[in-house]
Image (cartoon, rainbow, N blue to C red; front, top):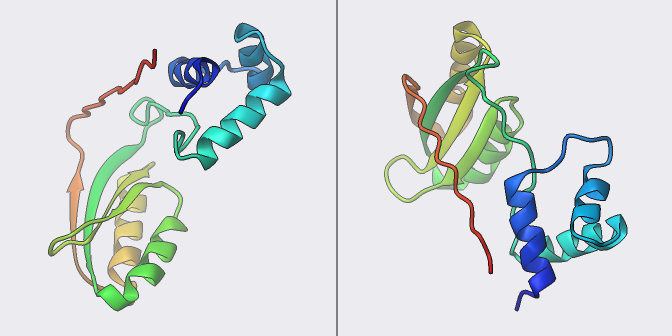
Length: 150
């Protein structure tokens, strides 16, 4: 069960993490607590499964990056090694195993078409990859989801 303080922390980290040398100290001050206490609670919330990830999101288009949604059909016995390899490449995000013919889906952000093609060729060549579909982003849809806990 989440305490009111835990809910306040989760609400705060969803809204805005300060761009400061010590962002958690600033956030702790806003929440009327100590930085150490805040960090301990964040670790406990992550351990408890309430917090999956804490990090920045960048406007990839503004930074000159191109997005691609990639779907792979991977031999089941090679899934772990393919996932490990794919996750090792810069620009790979949101990597999920799925049911169906194409059982591994991820997004790829690249600074150029040449780099995108280079990485797609590398993914195609991974042992266990049987087929690949690459869908290049033409329009950006960004859904901002926030859960306001009360």
